Amino acid sequence: MAEILTPEEIIKQGEPVFVKTKLMTDNTLSYCPGCGHGVAHRITMEVLEEMGIGDQTIGVAPVGCSVLAYEFMNIDMQQAAHGRAPAVATGIKRLFPEKYVFTYQGDGDLAAIGTAETIHACNRGENIVIIFVNNGIYGMTGGQMAPTTLEGMVSSTSPHGRDVEMMGSPIKMTEMVATLPGVCFATRQAVHKPGLVRKAKKAIRKAFENQKDKKGTSIVEIVSNCNSGWKMTPVDSNIWLEENMLPVFPLGDIKG
Amino acid sequence: MAKVKGAIVVDTERCKGCNLCVVACPTNVIELNEEVNIKGFNYAYPKFHDACTGCTNCATVCPDMVITVYRFKPAKA
Ligand SMILES: Cc1ncc(C[n+]2csc(CCOP(=O)(O)OP(=O)(O)O)c2C)c(N)n1
Ligand code: SF4
Ligand code: SF4
Ligand code: SF4
Ligand SMILES: [Mg+2]
Image 1 (cartoon, rainbow over the protein chains, first blue to last red):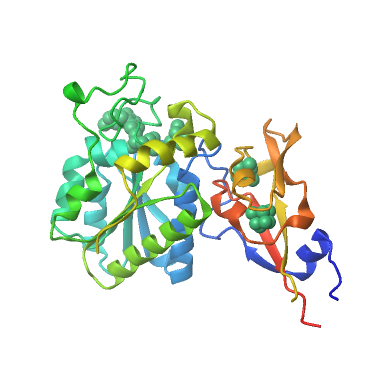
Image 2 (image 1 turned 45 degrees about the vertical axis):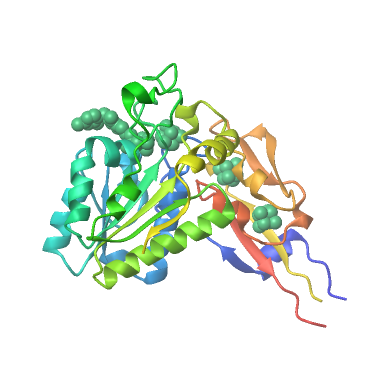
């Protein structure tokens, strides 16, 4: 009969099986408690660490809550003007084709002000990775309606819910750019449950492997919460996400 | 069969008390403390630590990288 160890003994004698990646800095994340941005950052950095390419990668931070991503991701980063991350990433990748280049963008950044940059970088098949965190709202500026806001969803600029007659329907950017020949991989993931986090990480890995193989643009959408903007607790926001976001933005590979 | 045992270390001062690790733990190890940390958050702690299997679910969903997980597999007798 094996002896029963106390937790303290397990910590001393056991193997560490989950340790914060060194590619995240020790800075306290500026995100609200429970916000999915933290997990999306971490798994992106874990992929770079596992591929051993942290020192060969340049990230492009957006405008939005993740504007400070360069404070948290312990790699070379450039911050871009609102929506322009794919254009900035294009320039970086073309100057340094041997580097791995990715953008990290919210839905306001990627699907509203940056629509043109997104579509044309994808259409050119720029050999970059786009990490697209879709929380259906402008989190940073106080919860305004985004192009991705759901029908009937209340936001500070749609207080009676999004009226699709007047404001159009939630835009599915990942499906849209998947139609372009330049895009080799388009997938939609989530990070609110352990199994989904592990899947999302695999998708990000595949995206960076595509870049290594010079296959073109990979876009990994991550459906995420904005518990502050949605005005819910973190746990409730993840339940709401599952019940309301996922039917409109279903998870899985769209292309590649 | 030797049973894998786990344990967690919570970096109390980094915790934002979001409760996501609590709902992610399959064996209900974690609870939020009634005490608060220096930022005023009710921080997570392993209340029923002996039930931990080291599955890493809590750390996987923690947005703030607060939790480190250890696992110990006793050698077969
Ligand atoms: C040119 C310009 N227009 C508008 C803004 C204001 N602004 C800052 S963040 C933001 C939206 C961010 O939303 P999203 O990309 O979804 O990021 P989130 O905060 O939700 O992660 C806007 C409109 C700005 N900073 N610059
Ligand atoms: S406002 Fe929303 S997106 Fe921004 S940090 Fe808070 S929860 Fe996250
Ligand atoms: S490692 Fe698994 S069992 Fe242990 S506290 Fe975390 S979620 Fe619970
Ligand atoms: S998930 Fe992380 S930040 Fe949230 S309560 Fe648990 S340990 Fe604290
Ligand atoms: Mg957003």
